[in-house]
Length: 260
Ligand SMILES: [Cu+2]
Image 1 (cartoon, helix red, strand yellow):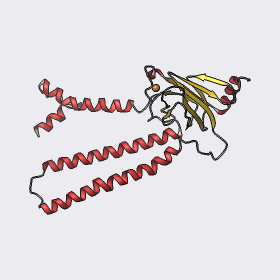
Image 2 (cartoon, rainbow, N blue to C red):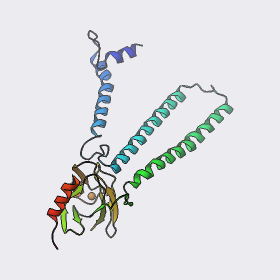
Image 3 (spheres, rainbow, N blue to C red):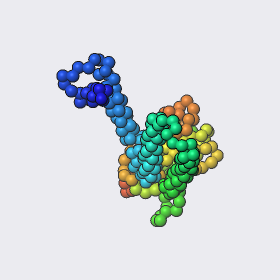
Image 4 (cartoon, rainbow, N blue to C red):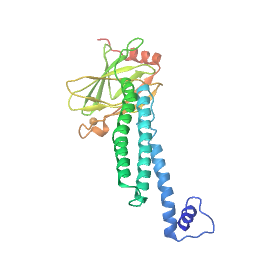
């Protein structure tokens, strides 16, 4: 009871007139400050130009939803395991007869070791596979996706628009609201194309072309980064994606097109 009162008194809303010694006060504040700092740090990680938890397109939205579902499930599982552990640590030996203890143990092995993981993986696949399909260049209900070729090299992104002669470095222009298929390859080592707010990452290999479908819901500027360590310049291997309205994009592409 005394300890509880000290905890309450020493929290952020501590009582005036109560004067705990300095050590107690610091110990009382520490958990609250740690919790506030932790929550603050967690929340700052949820937005920003490189946050996959601040999605701006269908592929990224699916990945973020799946992430939240997995994180929530993990937290619930952790809490349940900790509660069970506390319960087990407080039980007296011999409280339950051996035969009954064995039955309980078997139930936990079957439930926690078989039923829970099988259900979790089935759920993950049921939701994860359709979300993964949003990143694949599958046929569209209407028309075709815009194709953009991206070649990575240490430490640049070479971007070209087939049939237009348009070539850019470290910059992509795309129309918002429509699917774009990025044909990704590399000239030297393995790189990985990643625009966290628009979708998942995809590796880029020399001698092979992988196709990633992305879409920005709204016009705006998005940022990308190489997501596979590729040498000393890796950390600076960034690029910008500028999403325009379809009309603005057409105008930009026409203006940039080079007669060959
Ligand atoms: Cu890299």
